[in-house]
Image 1 (cartoon, rainbow, N blue to C red):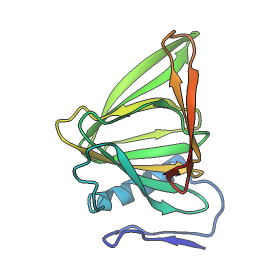
Image 2: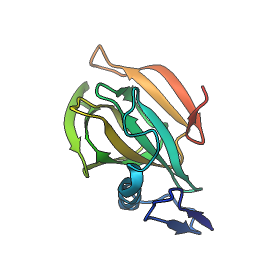
Image 3: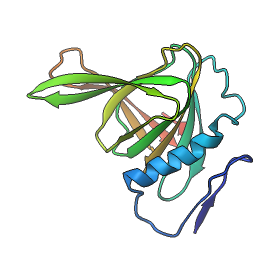
Length: 175
C-alpha cells in the first residue's frame, strides 16, 4: 500500500494498493487536491526562475508543484510517454499545443487561469509560459512517473525535430 501526505498543510491523501495507472479524471482529481495546498510550499511564492519540487510519488503517479516567474516558460516538449494533468493553483499560464493536421503542424494556444486545468495523453507536445502580470504556480501529475522530456524545434512547420532529451529521476533533472 502507498500512502502520501507530503505537505504539513495537505488536505488530500492518496491510498492505493492498485498497480494500474490512474485514469485522466483520477489524475485531475489528484492535481486539484494537491493544488489546494500548493501555495504553502516554501520558496515557491516569488520565483526568479522556473523551479519545481516533487510533492508526491507512488508506483502509479508522480506530482510536481511548479513555480513560474513572469516570463518563465518551458519550451516545446513531450513527457516521454506519460499522460498528465495540470492545474493552475495561482496566476495564469498559456499553453500552446502542437498537432499534425493534414500533414502540417498546427499550434493552438489557450489561457489556463487559477483553478483551470489541462489533461493530456502520451505523445502530447506543448509549451507553457507565464505572461504575468505576476508569478504563477501549477501542479502537474504524471502517470507513470516522469522520466524524460524531449524538446522540439518545429520551424519548418511540417515536422518536429528533437533537439534534446532531459532525463529525470525522482523529479530531479539528471541529464
